[in-house]
Image 1 (spheres, one colour):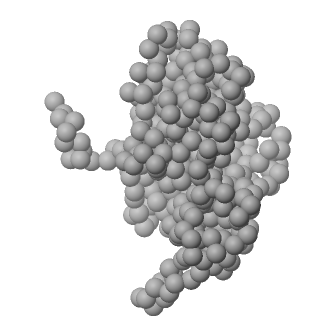
Image 2: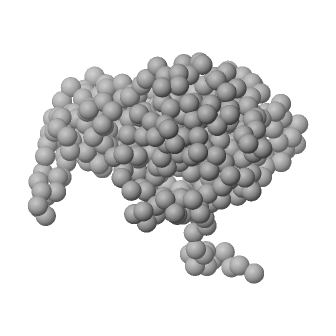
Image 3: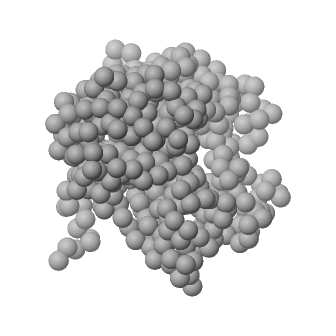
Length: 399
């Protein structure tokens, strides 16, 4: 019998795609994700990012936490749990959502798939089964963690549709953004959704673990003429920064694990207030969020920054007038796609708006084993930093 107190002795799990990923991981660069071992970079991070923006890329999504929510009250339960209106989510559609505690602080964000009228899949970064089960009290609904029973891949890039078409999936052409459908590829049953985390044309493929290796091989056979290559988390992280997407425990701290009470953030403070539907009825955190909106009491704002120079401002402190600390950079990169030094930052209000004309970031650049302090001017800009029309074009171009 396993003692949960000794969880740190348990080796990281491997995904159903691990045999192929391990063989391709020439740098043997691995990192943890949700209790699984995941590739950080295969051989060349710059070329992996290039594949996302100019060719086609394949990323193992299997460690992502996945919950199956089903039953007569599934929609009502999820409407109570999340801040978006689930009644507006059609069968076969996907939407990005978030959920809060009773204080209106964000616990996590993720994607909600409506598989059938009373059948949903909720995908997210962190594990929330106890919270979901407690929140389901009084609802006729079942909630199962299906992370281990679903193998998933993210196929992204301008040639992603061309790869699927060459694999025999011409019908994917009709799939609109944030829609999904069931297909068969060489006898492999697979659900394909037009979703992703790169801000580019792309798809996510969901199948049973027994079909994982056959699906991987089929895609690489089809993608050989389109520059398809496996990518690691590092390249994906660069692409998501360019797309302006946020990640739990990187850009915000989930409320249930924040050690300091003032570290939790509301949807208003991390740019997710556009999701909130105050007219749909009661949901977790509604009273607190409505009070915050009416009082204008949000303390922070998550913003995009355009920074002078070409040195990434990872975790840099943000200053107003070079002297007053007003925030911190949560994610940063020199973007090869837009040729700009970009960042996401948590800024104290009102320095995100009317007082944003004199912002600076403090960067420490390593120069021959010594750090050089750089004070670089920063400007608040709109997100996403990278946006291309091919992301939403239906049918997509083959490139």
